[in-house]
Each structure stands twice: as C-alpha cells, then as structure tokens.
Length: 130
Image (cartoon, rainbow, N blue to C red):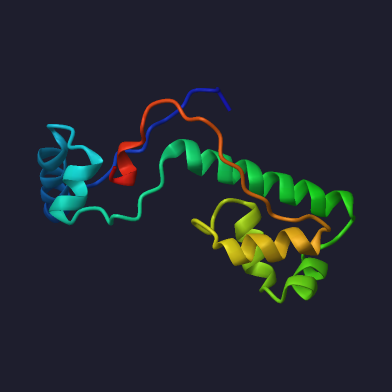
C-alpha cells in the first residue's frame, strides 16, 4: 500500500444531478430556520443546538451511571420495560430526542432522579417563538 488516497468518481444520473441542482438553488440564499419551517421544508419541532448538546451530555451521564452500577443493557431493559435496542440507540445518540418519561425511567433504573432547573440565559432563543 502506497498511502495515497484515491477518490472514487461518483457516477450521477440525470435525476441525481437535477435533484442536487434544485437543492443548491433552494439553499443558495441561506434561509433561516423560520423560513424553512414556513416553506414546509422543516418541521417546527427543531431543537436549539445548545439544548441538543446538553441532552447528549445527560444521556452520556446516564450511560456512565449504568456502567458504574455494572448493569448491562439487558438489565436496564428489564428495569425500565424499554426495548434493549431502543436503549442502545438512546445511549448512542441515534434515537432522536427522547421523551421525558423515558429519561425518567432510565434515571430511576440506575438509581438517579431526573431533575430540572432554570438558569439565567444569554440572548433570547428565537426558535422558541417569543
């Protein structure tokens, strides 16, 4: 092996090229989230990136708590009544945004309690519609 990277040439069909052209045209002016929602291209259920990252940190903390209790996913599935595959996807960030009851059941299963708090924020979050 010589260490050189070889880029495989992608063969695009006429339909692929047209679809890509339309997407580039649509996003050339860099529409805002509000504009994408209004046009129907995006649902109104978007989550701000900061909140999404906090949620991922919470899931990571829950996974660490499970590991510290030496619980397998099968053990956790039994304790929560949730499917083992769903729990795995939840822990690995592949399940989208989990529901509060799911998070609370997971936390309880590892001996924790889900709690909420409010902290002063920076600028007003425009995606909340206020």
